[in-house]
Amino acid sequence: MKKQFTTIILTVFLVVVLIICFAFVIAGQLGWFSKEPVTAIDKCEKYNGIWLSEFSECENISEEVCSSNGGFFNACGSACRHNPEAKICSMQCVPFCEYATINSKADLIRVNYPQANQVIEGSSLEITGLARGTWFFEASFPVQIRDLENKILFEGLAEAKADWMTIDFVPFELKVNLESTKIKGKIELVLKKDNPSGLPANDDELIIPIEIK
Image 1 (cartoon, helix red, strand yellow):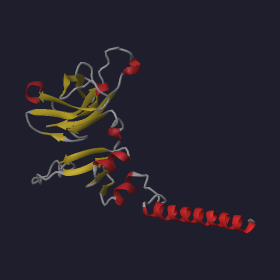
Image 2: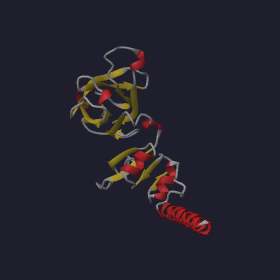
Image 3: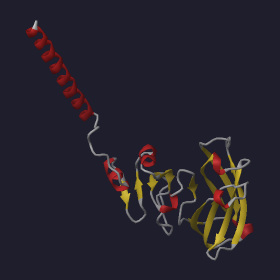
């Protein structure tokens, strides 16, 4: 009886050991023990992106990878976005992830156009992007254009293009007629969270520097 009991104990022990070993093998194959890259540069390199150190950007990575590391994803950036003086520019979209401090509010509001430090030419400026429903009130939020001395040159309302009564991201749009406003030079685009309460604690804004020629 004692021998039989010992055999059972040994059998159970071996089964447990085998299960643990098998679990470790599977976990290793799934990469559970591999060190996940933490920095933006590490993730960019791991997923075969192209890191642009001067602009804190990674080209050609997916939106999922970008968002998982706190970046701001642009699915269709201009190939000449960092070279506004280029005479010839490919019309091909360049997907890229931006980690610059301008997008420190990327979990609240994301601007697709214009990008920070972009040079704008033409008679109009179309501001597009996504913002959490909590950034809106009555389907809109205020937008200002200010000069570098903080003088307000333009005020308008960006309008939601979908149901804004949600905590999810909602597309927005605002078109500014640059001919009528006669805005030129380096300016700041200010996207303000709508704050019907008027309480300073509820104020928030995203400032994007651009240049209008």
